[in-house]
Amino acid sequence: MMASGSDAWASSPSRGASADALVDVFAPARTVMVQAQIAARGVIDSVVLDAMRAVPRHRFVPAEYEAEAYHDRPLPIGQGQTISQPYVVAAMTEAMHLAPRDRVLEIGTGSGYQAAVLAEISGEVYTIEIIESLGRRAESTLTVLGYKNVHVRIGDGYQGWPDKAPFDAIILTAAPDHVPQPLVDQLKVGGRMVLPVGKVEQTLVVLTKTTEGIKREEYFGVRFVPMTGEVEHHRPASTDSLRRPN
Ligand code: SAH
Image (cartoon, rainbow, N blue to C red; front, side, top):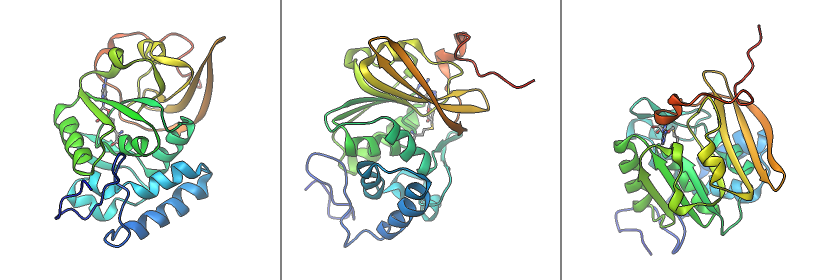
């Protein structure tokens, strides 16, 4: 057992923090969240639904927002950044088609919540955050909750994490205006990359790397914070830019 005496969250030995139903006052709120916001909108993967029921989302938001942690909306996490709406986290996770041993890269650690959801259902999670204070806080939240399979790095995620590549799946939770090529290069054949693409109006894009090339699917419209740093100095390839209606 990793949980300290004062911590209401019991931790499972190797993975993250599956809540102890006896002391977890927010468990009913999570059950309702999964049913009303996530399953009701079409997320069917039971592994993803279980992960969304297991991760204590209220531990990843500032104390003043704790009571709203299971509401159907994104929330501020400081530094002008946000934790995504629960449904968006679940839909993106489902789109990654993860297996228990997968090695996953996340760009945009933020609060660490998405990383925790990924850690519940994959092998190792590598996550990069460009704002140091957020990355450090996320790292400590994840440690306290007992997630040993999440590795946080401070830096610009545009170039990925070459020493740990290739990855079975990659997720971006900040929006670039084009798909960063270094990340595509770090994806395994058969692997999937899920990301919002666009400036203000963004589309959730799912790329699958095949032996024939990259297959691209577009899901739905989303609004993430923009990806910053190196991405801003690269021009989008024409196929990546979103066509605007005249
Ligand atoms: N996944 C997060 C939500 C993150 S919001 C969660 O579950 O809470 C997006 C995050 O991406 C912000 O924290 C922002 O600082 C970070 N970000 C933006 N550009 C980045 C870049 N180039 N590299 C790494 N992180 C970046």
